[in-house]
Picture 1: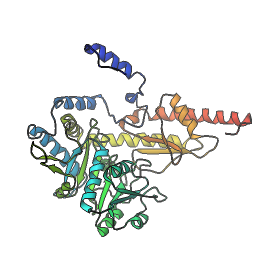
Picture 2: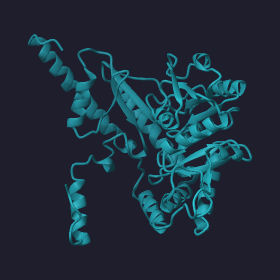
Picture 3: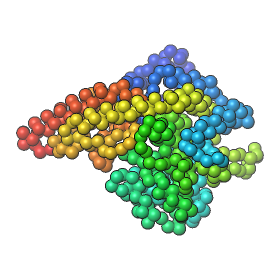
Picture 4: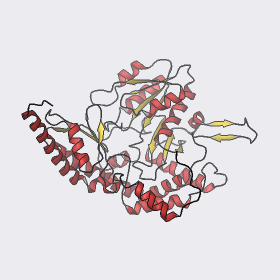
Amino acid sequence: MRALPRQGQEWPVLQQALAEAKARDHSWRRGRMAVFFYYLDEALERVQQQAYEAFWTENNLGQRAFPSLARLEGEVVEMALSLMRAPEGAAGTFTSGGSESIFLAMLAARERGKRLRPNIVMPDSAHLTFDRAAWYLGMEVRRVPAAADRRSDVAAMAAAMDEQTVALVGSAPNYPFGTIDRIAELGRLARERDVWLHVDACVGGFLSPFLSKLGAALPEWDFAVPGVSSISADIHKHGMAAKGASLLLVRDAALKAHHRFESSAWARGTYVAHTAQGTRPGGAVAAAWAVMNYLGEAGYLDCARRIQSARGTIAEGIASVPGLEALPGEHAILVYRSTDPALPIARVAAALGERGWLVSRQLDPDGIHLHLNPLHAEVAAEYVADLRAAAEETRGGATAEMAAGRAY
């Protein structure tokens, strides 16, 4: 077991050790991975770092001591509410990430519903974070198979509801396929049954509005849909902020009471929190505020254009490889699979890995999953070239095995 060193070490020694620790990590700066990172350029990176450092020590729990953080957080929430077409009186909470935003939404739905055995109904394409939140909160999850187009089957979801249902969930988009659920229909169902409707826009919240401005025909998904109670949106995804930045937005500020904790059951006095955290890093708020103001609408539109460009180049490249097929989708998520037994996708993935790409696999259907961000526009052509080479190598290996009498 490693023990704390008896004497401290100088920073240059530690800096070298950290560099060595990262030596085998995949190179996100070169865009050779399509998961876990979001990156535009060094200029934005400096904005993130310097804004975070400016509030490095400040604790966002103590907004009475640091009123600047209350103002910055409020402005971040207001900009997001405007972007997602919220009505007057809407509100939001700055969280550590999509998992916390979803947790708070499900907590609010449970507390509002006040059912003895609460359940939530969602398509089977919804993020597993909902199951994790339900596990914490003692709620039942009812996953309903999505329709053939990999969007919510609203009639089947309605059939899965009962008197104990407190929430419906839709994704905009879902993470497995990048398709947007039928939020407008779910909104009507939520209003008819008087239940909470949460839209998981952790991926799309800060991208969909700009794709729409660029002409993408996306289904309605935000607060413009009657019946949407809350939206989760990650600023540290396509909002391009430093990690540790997400939002839970609610249609009416009064709904925040359902995820508000307050107690005076100790000697210190009243304690109030709207999040699962106590101490909250002020740097995450400052970095999000700075990035949103630095990019502005024009900057976010540029990011969306780059993602569209990357998706178009890669989708066209996939279509040019016999035996490969991209699944339908309209967002930053791109999934493709093999339609040829002589081109096993697992071997294509391995061959891409040998060429330095971190490959994210899809389980059903068996395929390769890409979550694109602006940097991928710079490496899309390189990815396509390596994909073609990987497919040729795979097909050649499979043919050789068949010729040798070894069935694959």
